[in-house]
Length: 140
Image (cartoon, rainbow, N blue to C red):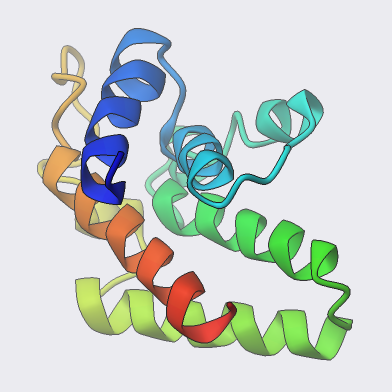
C-alpha cells in the first residue's frame, strides 16, 4: 500500500474511530510506516499531548513526531547529540511549513465543543507526510 493511502486510512482508524489524539495517532501511523514496535505505555504517555491537554500549547502532531524521532534514532543507536539535532531540524521544518508550533494557532477555530473529528484533517495529512518525508530523506 502506498504511504498516502496508508496515512488516510490510519487517520480514520486511529483518530476518528478509536478517538486517539493527534500525538497518539501520529505515533501509531509512523510506527506502521517505518515498521517500528512501540510499547503501549508510550502511546498512553502521549494522552495529554494534544496541545497540552487541549490547552492550545504545542501541537500534538509535532509532539508525536518528536517522540517517534526519539524512538527511531535510539533504535538506530544514535547518541543524544544526534537525537537533539534531528529533533531541532524537524521542528524547524515543521515551523517553516506551518508557520507555528502551537495548536491554538494551527487548529481552525481553536477548541470548540462539538468540533468535528476532522477539523484538523488537512493539517494532519500534511504533517504526517512532512514527517515521513523527513525521516526518509534525513534519517534513512
